[in-house]
Image 1 (cartoon, rainbow, N blue to C red):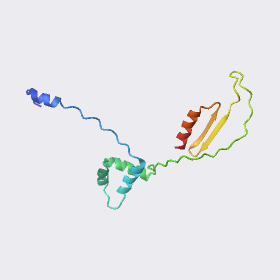
Image 2 (cartoon, one colour):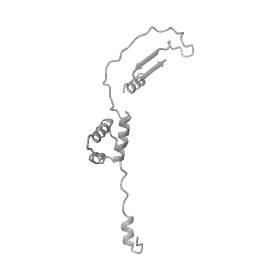
Image 3 (cartoon, one colour):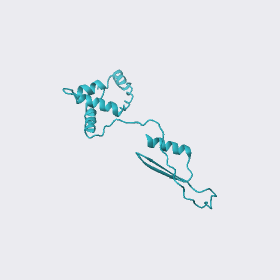
Image 4 (tube, helix red, strand yellow):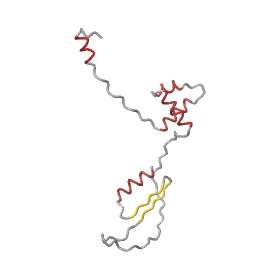
Amino acid sequence: MDTSNPEAVEAVSSHKALPPIKRQRRSPELKRQIVEETLAPGASVARVARAHGVNANQVFAWRRQYQQGLLKAATRARPGLLAVRVAEAVTQARDSQSGRSPRGIIQVELPQGKLRLTGCVDREALRVVLEALRG
């Protein structure tokens, strides 16, 4: 660059930096759709990727995930009723330090796992945990 021309130096140094590009998040369903388009006979990964505004290398990575069974569609359970079983509680002595009643036990079994709570349980905290477990 010619540094003898102050106008040229000013023109180059006055360019502002471009804003950072935000990372795009694509749903598992969209990734599956894009991958399945590339699996059609005669399909070009590069063309499909370009049509969706995705880098072809990213699509190849999704194809590997798809072939390994890792690219599954998210299934969200709809809100519904939970089965409840009430078991007879074992009587405990009063807590001598706090003077509180015997502690209870709540055990929740869902397909994703089990949750066992003992003692006094905060309703809001329990609601948040149950929603997270249900998906």
